[in-house]
Length: 211
Image: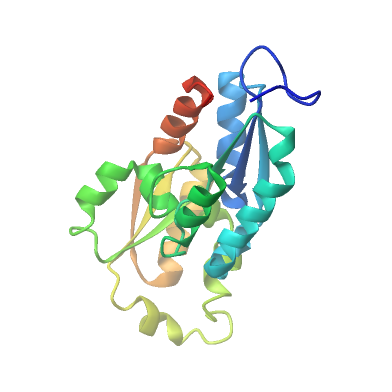
């Protein structure tokens, strides 16, 4: 790419990460830890997950609106229920997406999560973000605040709530146990750290720009 006045002609390529707002805390932590000053984060609303059919168009708009300002753009959304439509849009736009069907998978590590899939068919997952935002993203959208009797209908087929923890936070662990109690499920904590999110961003940092 020929540098424009907004592109740096030397040093690491100026990179925009277009990401789900549910990943903001973790991405910013990795940027700080690694000193990736050439990476900038643009978050789209996490509530897009409640209407996943809107994610591809929202990502496409963000790419088109920002393409001229950056050397590279990467999409930090999993498929997130788009049924492959996000991948098709990323291919059309020529941008890379973090691998994985959802953030549970890439936080746990895509290979490890897939290997456990059969054994954990009756597990309900929460990340740190979803523990913090349990009411906004689980309890109220499922109508459990208005109709608590729905709990056993919705979660009767589950056995446990697995908290995929990105951080060591006793207060958050206590909140996750309370989420499990409210859903009538056993609680399990699994520390994942940043999983394949870390792998993806490190790979992106190390990869040369395509000519």
